[in-house]
Length: 335
Ligand code: P6P
Image (cartoon, rainbow, N blue to C red):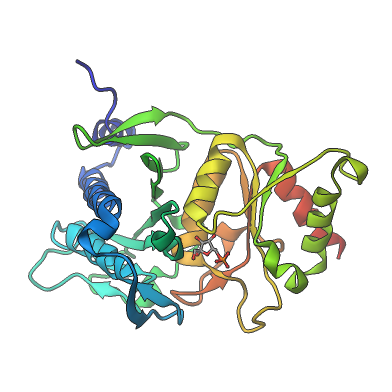
């Protein structure tokens, strides 16, 4: 019985379109996919294997780490450090970069990842995910530093995420559109189920943490107030609101039925430019959203154009359906 196109077959067929493809990239992507399968299985078992709850430590962001933050970080590291495709890795859960250990060969790519995005939800059994971004290691560099990771989002070779929800899904882009796969746990393979995903240009659904309302800048207040005014206000139609507090779940919903996701700049902590991290949340999700026909912006600039200055740099994020993001960007210009 034909099982459909597996993610491995898909990647190899994609690779054939690239004239200079060495197979290195395909093998790297397969190692990342393996890590996501292991994480899916671990998250699925949760309390049964004692992996829930706090690890009693903080990450570089000052956020309390869950046990699963550390476990999943280690899964990604161990699945990808040995094969010779990477020169180094960086993660939300590690202060500095992770150089490939001496006993393993080094490769030409850099991997940046958030091993368990939305992990504050894990103890309450709400969907979480793994976000990853692949960059090229600069030519001639065999021992990269954090500086070598600080590349604009436009330099990404690949971006993807796994979503551990009712189904475990994988969403990928290598710059030729966006494709979604569902993990068939009976055979342990991600199978192509959502080819050529596209973000609808219009939407009636916005996502924002409304508890931050009093900290928002005027353009965001105006946009959200107009959505809340519905058909009695300037938009002339009603809107719906969602907030899952798990970016992977929000982005997947937007890829499926449209929407606008906002974690904007606010005055809650003036020292922070936003909550979400550029290198392993905003940039990979921006690559995916743009490849699916959406827009991803800070309100003042295209996220993928930002020249990073720090591995754990935070940025405002407004992404999703083109016509809604464009509208909110125009409100920033009107300011
Ligand atoms: P808040 C999860 O911690 C995360 O980084 C994103 O996945 C999510 O969109 C956001 O933070 C949730 O933030 O302030 O609503 O808990």
